[in-house]
Amino acid sequence: MSATLKHAAWVLRGNPVTALAATGATLLVLIAIFAPWLAPHDPILSNVPMALQPPSATYWAGTDQLGRDVFSRLLVATRLDLAIAVSAVGISFAAGAVIGSFCGYIGGWLDKSVGRLVDVLMAFPLFVLAMAMVAALGNRVENIVIATAFINLPFYIRFARAEVNVRRNLGWVEAARSGGESHMTIVLRYLLPNILPAMAVQISLNLGWAILNAAGLSFIGLGVQPPTPEWGIMVAEGARFITAGQWWLVAYPGLALMLTVLCFNLLGDGLRDILDPRMRT
Amino acid sequence: MRALKSVGVRVGRRLVASVPALLGVVVFTFVLMRVLPGDPAVFFASGPNAGQAEIQMIREQMGLDRPVHEQLIRYFSEIGRGQLGRSMTTGQAVVADLRERLPASLELTLVALILALGAAIPLGILAALRPNSPLDHVVRFVCSMGVCVPTFVSGLLLIYVFYVVLGIAPDPTGRIDIFAASPPDITGFLLLDFAITGDWEGWRAAAGQIILPACTMALFVLAPLARMTRASMLAVLGSDFIRTARSIGLSRWKVIVVHGLRNALLPVITITGIVFSTMLGANVLVEKVFSWPGVGSYALDALLGSDYAPVQGFVLMMALAFVVVNLLIDVLYGIADPRVNVE
Image (cartoon, rainbow over all chains, first blue to last red; front, side, top):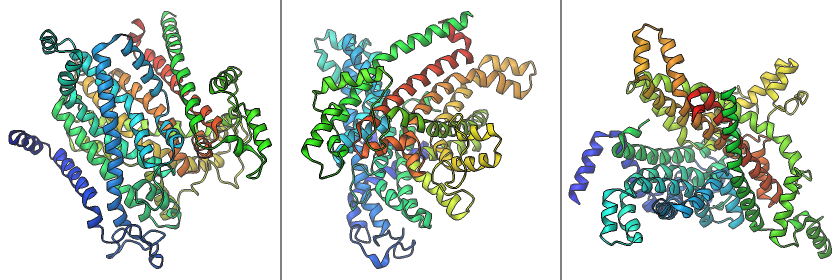
């Protein structure tokens, strides 16, 4: 274990940007966990006399139309935003990796029919599909997770399928087969772990995308309901005041979204550079 | 002639191959829309206190009392006749609504794509000419930033800077000032219509309205385009024929643009196609921020009002656009690199 950590530290020293991104991501997770204790003000309690105050020493990011502290709301929202993205990506990764691996390993009609289904999904405008799914399943946070996971699924299936397909007849797979392992074991115990590093890149790049997607859905009023602090809905509420000059209601949640997505994207880029330097663009 | 024929064959094959996907899209959206909460018949009835009999009558009129598979067959036969049903909120046929609003969305997406390509290709080339130089890092940084800011945030911030603070952008609502005269409806693209009629003042006003939403979208898609250009140019510039072209003393411009860029174009075309179809779908958010009267905001309003037909029509149209864009790319491939035609 300590050898792995040492190796990771050695790799990160050579990639300052990736190291920075990794630190940022860790910090985000810590904020997500400890936000309720870190927030200087109550994120829900309104304080109308102090409404729409610009950023100051007391209110670092200003106050919104109900006098709530924007900075506290930003901190508290981290947990919900990260939770939505992580669970959505987790679900689509788990399902997509298993489905894609079996398709790549078995091939034949299963591969063909799943491939067709994936084609159909990819022909959809994905954001609109997510919108329609949340509207159809009901306007709740769980359904944002399901919809985001669903529109990510095709990418994972394709990716896992391609990765398994090039490995299915390699020596060590043949060896496992001739050793009498069942196909189930070969896919789940040998092939899946083998494609995990490549998929880690995909996961990291996808997390940023999932956050943007979830924020976009709540921006148009689907999923998260008003008093709950969430970055997308904070931007939506602030949008009404932008022409009146109250920029902090949009700028700070926007900054939070940007930094979070940036962290995960840079982390994904860094992981890819380490795992496969040729893919760098 | 032979090249033309081979393009035709490829296009035909692609069209046939896309039919199952399109059918799948129609069926899937249809089923999804039937799960939407809210009874459209109640919504469509004259008011909240409409009688049970009236609601029942509307249900029968809309065919909602039939089993789902029968409704689906009816929908297919409607599509066969070129109809997509009727919107309950606007009271018009969905086809007419879409036709009225599509030019707005297309104009916005095309202008955004032109802006994005106009910035991304030079940036990508510059970055590829000097890999790992400060310039390369700046381009990389700008691209990474662009893809991290959600369009609804960058749109609002652009409004703040250019409308509220600097006051140089017009009121960010719609395609044209409410008090301005709109041009005669020739193509539906305001910029083209104004140019055709020679109304340059109107053209400037329309351009002022479109520039902010177009920039918002362009910023978001800058990254994939510039990065692909850089990677592709980098690979081409290292190849033998570029070395030869340089060694025989061709001008720098000729080496980079004529010989380099042309050979680096294929991957860029592919990614442009992908970007264009995602932009058409991602329009929804930008159109909402700028109150743009396009198909995206139309579908969004319909969805929030549980109005089936427009959403189905919108999704089908987007899937069709996806197919058409892929076809166009196939054709462009053959023009950019004739070797593709020789399979």
